[in-house]
Length: 201
Image (tube, rainbow, N blue to C red):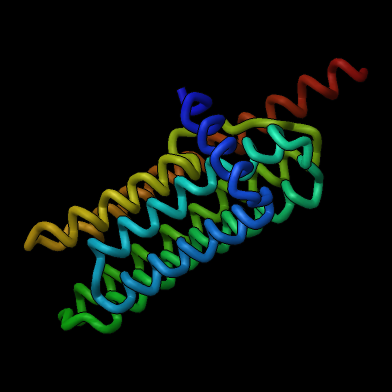
């Protein structure tokens, strides 16, 4: 399904002369702008901008393949800026809660949700990179980056639209499911490595 979006978008970016690496950096900058809006107390606009940055990330790889400019460094750049863009949003959320008028218990709950969400989200992404370094390629798991970006963006938009602060509970869901995904992916990678060892044996 995504290819029906990626290819037309990649063609449009090629037509205006943008390169895959420029799209990667631009997507990161948009995500950081979304995080800044969240930190300033505008979750609705921050969520919309962050989703726009996540959507831009769909096109750098497609543009690289379309133009024949795919490279190991481009893949590395994309991976690094994906992680940094997502981490920036968690920083923005942390500032959002620090600047809010929250009771001490709610402040602790909110900040803990941000920290655990960041730790487990980055852990899932690290496992994929580490597995690929060992020759085990997998994107398995319930809460991958695509799901996290979508849930974070939509959660922020709903937070901005409703008078009820739901984002902290969204973060707890992300943290919990990401924790499960981390171990799910770890055992998937172990299975791949064991099969490779048997095949080589």
